[in-house]
Each structure stands twice: as C-alpha cells, then as structure tokens.
Image 1 (cartoon, rainbow over the protein chains, first blue to last red):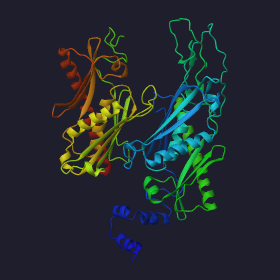
Image 2: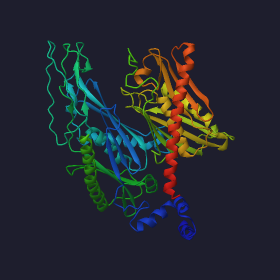
Image 3: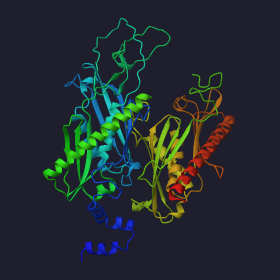
Image 4: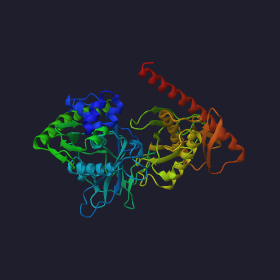
Length: 333
Length: 241
C-alpha cells in the first residue's frame, strides 16, 4: 500500500492545514488539477508587485520592490576610483546581494545562504550583459578617475522569486532620480579640459552622479558651493548632476515546473516542493537576455520553453507599467 | 562648533529636551514569527524574531531555559560612506552582545526550555542612536512574536554639549566628542537595565543626563504601547471579534 492510498483515505478526515504540512505535493496537485493555486491565483499570474523609489535617503539612488511578500531593498552609492589599464575610459559596477538572517528562518547568521551567492552571481551577469548601463558613461578623467557604482541589494523578506524581485529593485534603483541643484562654476587659472557627458535617453531619469572636481593634488573631491562669494580654486569636473543613460531594461520571471504545469512566480513553499525552477529574462526591445534552468527533476520540452517565454513577455508589460507609475508618482513630488 | 545656538535650538531645529520623530510598524517581515520597523528621526532599523524554535547547536541547548541569540548588522549603504565590513567587526559584535543581554533579562526564558529565540536586527539608515532604535525595534518584534516578557524594554540616548543636556542625539551630535549616555529602561518595573556612557562627564551632571534619558525612555514606552494596542485592535477586527 503506497503513500498515495493512505493519504487519499486520510484526506477526508484530516484538517486542511495538517494535510498541507504532511502531504504538500498531493495538496498542490489537487489545486493544480483545477488550474488554481492555494492562494487563489491562476497558474500564469504573478503576485501583486509594488515599487517605491527613494527608500534610502542617504544613497545616490534607491528603491524598494515587493512581489507578494518578497521584499528587496536596493541602494546605489557612487565612489571615485582609478580605472584599470585595459579600460581607461570605463567605470565599474559592483553588485552585491545580501540575505540577512531576518529574511528567512533557514538563513543562519555567520553563514551566507546558498541562494544568496547564486542570486548574486545571476544578477551580476544579467545586469552587466544586458547592456542596461554603458560603462563609458561612468568615466570622469580618462585613465585617472572613473565612477564605481556600488549596488547593494538586501533581501528583507524571502518568499520565493528572489531573483525577480532583486532585478526589479536593481533596475528601479538605477532609474531613481533626485532633483537637480544649481552649482556655481567660477573659472580659475587651474582649469581642466573635460568632455561633458551629453545625455539624451529614452529613460531620462537616472541615478544622480554627484558633482566633483579635481584639487591641486590631483585628487577627486566633492564639489561644494561656496556661499560667501570666495573665488573657487577648482572647477567642477562634471558640470551638472549627470544622469546615466539606461539602455533597454531587463525584466524577469521565474517559473516553477511540475509535470506538465508551469507556475509563474512561485512562493517559497511552492519553490521548496517543486524543485525545478526556470528564470527567463527579457528586455524591453523584446529580446531574450537570459534563460536559466539549473537542472531539476522536470525536463523542459521546446513547447515548455516557448510557454515560459510567452509568460515572461506578458509579465514584462505589467512590470513596465508598474515602473512607469512609480516614476510619474515621484515626479509629481 | 555650536550645537545649541543662543536661541536654544539644536542643529536640526529641535529643543534640547525634544526627541526625534518616532515611527513604528509591526509585522514588516511576513516570514518571521515577529518583526518590526522602528524609526527615530533618520535612523531606521528593522528587527525580526524567530522563535521559540529548535536549538540549532545541540551542545548549547539548556534544559531549564531558552537560548537567546542576537545579531546586529548594518547595511552597506546605511552610513554616509559605504561600509566595507558590515558585520563581524568589533562594534557590531559589541552591540549584538548588549542587545542580547538586555533582552534576555526581560524575556521569561524559563517558560521555554530547550528552545532558541533568535533576534536579528538590521540597520537600514544610521543617523545616531542605532543602539536604542534596535532595542526598541526588538521589543516590538518580540511582542509581535508573542514571546512572554517581564516588561517592555525601551531605550534612549542623551548627551551633554555646550553645557546643556540634550535628548536623543543624532549622528553629528554623537560624533562631537561629548558624552553619550544610552539607557535601557523597563517602564512598568521602573528599573534601568542598560546604562552605557562614553567620554568625560562631571559627576554632578551625570544624574541629570541620565534622568533625561529615562524620561525619553518613558515617552517611547507610551508610544510603543499605543502601537501595540492599535495592532491588537487590528487583529481583533480581522478575526471578526
């Protein structure tokens, strides 16, 4: 007598919660047969998503993204560094994904969660290869100074689809903009010839790059306004707060595969039961940026692949709308 | 540098006995047994409590009381300059210990033997008084998790600059080099559980400054009680009572 029979007999008498804990797969299959999930969603629908820009006021760009209960906080800090010899005209982006112990009962302090390292690498690869940021824009003085953008993403609540939420928060943080403030530029005998980075972009709102100048020792310092009319010793290296051009923005969708069902945007419970996950990343010009299926018991036929891509395309339209609403909400302020 | 100008206003426009704006939210982390976000001015802290649950390291298990663990970490972007090593450095370890011992004194650990209670605190924005904000957030999170406690623990800092006792220092006032007193207080039992002080302070002024911090703690306790009461009303409403 297999487990199937015993659970079938017991299900009539057992409480729903107990059945859910003891026989999770049977519980889910009962729902999938009706094309619905325990939280009431149809199979292809993602959870409610919200994006809030400017969550961290001390950062140069920040965003808080929530997909269902999964919460990610992303913040960008810019620092000046010397570019490497092989690419003197390029800045750098360092992406780090953290899963602090608050986010999930399975994360132990002192030991980074396995998922954190994997998602960190995935994010890094996706953002750098998608061409969203042109590194040449981060250059200041060729060969001497360039911007290093540190992107830190913190998971505050881990409830499935970590990569999706992290990518969304990263993209929103890069697009976050603060209002410009006027800067006085007084020409002095010590002038530097520089190219002004001219920006005209489809997505014209972006991270605020702080204005800097080079002091007499050749070091980059923050540019401050001298209110008392004293003559400035240095001229601003970048004359206005520069906005980054954002190329085509990547959007992603993670799906869980189980037999012939595809569940879009799984919760952590679903992820733990159905061990096969597929992540598809597409950009706004309808190109496939990345397809990630790291093994798992369910096999992907061609039809399954096209279905996942179609679901991602649909999700991309939703996410684009959500991001646009978040920007326009901010502009009003 | 002038921290209290001749009119009696501080750098951010507050009066010497005025605390920063408080804001608390319960249940921010859905996966945690109890969680809370606590803001004191620009300092923003999130606390999550997991427990009582099975002890992970069996060798540390205690047969007559619960094990309490605490970890304090700061986000890389929480301070003005990006932090290289947000945890494991000496300051974070010390504050973790301080918070653990403060909360442990208050939790009725003998009611939950052979179990473990984890308190995790993450600083999202730091502008002075992170220690106090963390303790307040931890209290709320423990209450949200339903863990039995003797009393609420509230904490507030105070200092003494330009010959004036100041309540609730922000980062600039804290790094001015003057004394910085942090007090952890149990409001109902009227007892001080945590008292830390840095820098020099004349003995006759210590009493004043400490009393000021205790008043601040009492005010925070009133606010925390309101928040908890509101939260309970919401829970009742949702259950249809």
